[in-house]
Image (cartoon, rainbow over all chains, first blue to last red; front, side):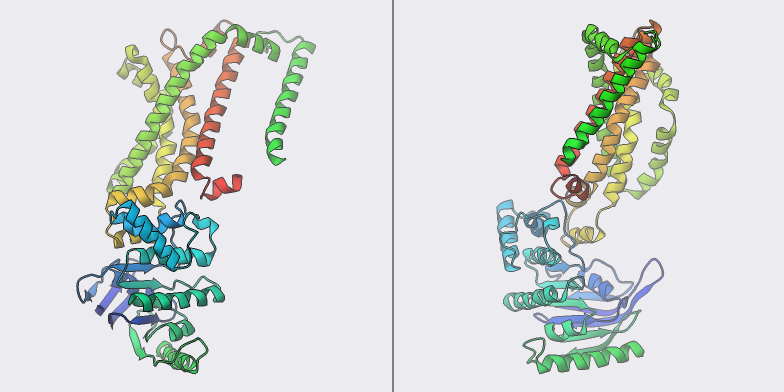
Length: 240
Length: 260
């Protein structure tokens, strides 16, 4: 689906965010990008989305650039617009007819459990609900590739777990390809099929861990075992 | 209860002040050409109602035309700045120069250039110069304040510059523009009055000229009546713009929500 190869990116302030970063995500995979704060995870995600241009290396897509949905760490909603208008933004920008756009945005809101909240403004919604609108907005454009940048980091644990389960359900139902940036070992161990562990800045991939099946819930032995192995790899990559 | 107090308390202060003023003038027998009593001012107001209203209409027309021109020019210039940093860096200093130069100093020049036969146009230009800057400053800051992630999102979906401007930058800038407009509304009135003062006799027919004329004739009660009318107009303009601001922001902006 998408491959990053030999990517380097230095920002104007002189910070070398990533260096020799290479990884690929296959169609239909759920891959987590895990690493300590400031290791260049978000930069990698923006490079994958084409929002940043690399100084060196290439980003290639298997069959041309896919439709991409992007979810930021905070909800990034338009405070002046209701939930429906927010979810409809990608469709409005693509000049989809209003009637169809409204129907698709409303369907996306319903899929994230927000039916009936179409005309609520962001300030009237809880943190978790705002993040759901943000996910609905990403889904409204019917993406093939969903990029999420620590989307649940600012939420409480119960909300975070609920949203994680919903994300898994959406991934299974839609056959999405998901690249999920996180600094949470437990989140990555439960949600993803593969975990890419990044080194501290400048970030590159230290380990590519394929997780076994049987992780049906957060406390399943296979999930706990996956956490142990991810933690060990993360610790050794940070220490190295 | 709080809302009643918001209105009742300033009114009570006004009533007290007027009563004290009325009493002081009659007690110390202050001559009417120094300080007329509120009752004398009210009498002057009703006696000159026709001419004062005509003068008000003239000043208000200049004010509203200048305010509209300042809004259009200020927002349009800010949009141009938001599309080109080079343009902003090149032209913003001149906007500042226009702002810091006292308008009374350039008003005579504008009157000469535009010509006394088109006096109203000259007055509108002078008042526009006074009102322009707060809108430009507010709109420029507002257009730059859009959430970077939202801008990135529009890029991801291939939005045009016009779409980003219309859907993200202008709504973000709205509270800043409205705040600039509230300042500009009062400034447009001040600009119109200053312009009338500078334009002088024989040309101007607005409230400022009524004030000058009444002063020259020692009709101090009429002067006060014109002054009160001017102040009331300024307050009304501010109130109308505040109401518009509240109405436009009431659903989403913190400023309007905490006020409701």
